[in-house]
Image (cartoon, rainbow, N blue to C red):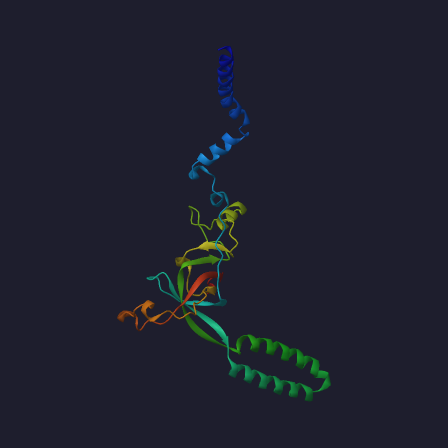
Amino acid sequence: MRLLALVFGFYALLALSLPFSDAQDAPKGADKKDAKKDTPDDEKPKKAEAKRETEQKVVYSAMLSGKLVWLDANSGRDFKVQIPETDPAKVARLRQWQLGEMNRISRANPKDQAREMAQYQIQLARKQSTETTTLKDYDYRAADNCKFRTNTPPIRYDDRGLVKPYTQKELSALRAKSKLPGFPVEFDYLAQGQVVEVYLAKTNTKKQPADKQPADKGDKKDEKPRQDVVMVVVTQEVQAK
């Protein structure tokens, strides 16, 4: 009997020591790992929100410069720009004039050749800037996300009707830390006679299937095709007459 009591006592002590031993043998930090697993996803910091939003880049195919000659105030999107283009016929005529002038100068009195050459250079510069191009009008349409900028800050007036200058701090705030040229404006800032830079949108050259092409509407058959523009920058205001 005494032996049986000792055996039962040994097993009872062993049973009591097992939970304590398991708790001791549990690896440190296990509770912390379980707590992290139980953390809801919406409480975790989102890296995308932590990052500072960057300005969307303007992607364009080409940039052209010209004068605004027409604006559609009703649409708030359509406008026309007059752009100078090289005229091959005018360039050919200028080359013929150059040959004639060089022959004339070569036959002139050696004492007068330096003066004649100087006058020729002045005339050549004027002709190259005014007599080699033809002005052509192009129709454009501002894309939905088109940006409008001006190289000079918009004019503002004080209570007395006088022009109110900007401080450096105000100009920095007006730029809004943008990497785009100039200052932001709206479509209604544009005016006929301004010199502008137009940034043409990249066109999709892939041909859409016939079933996905938009149906032609009767009221738009006569509408002129207009190329989309992603940014317009006013580089020169209307010159006062």
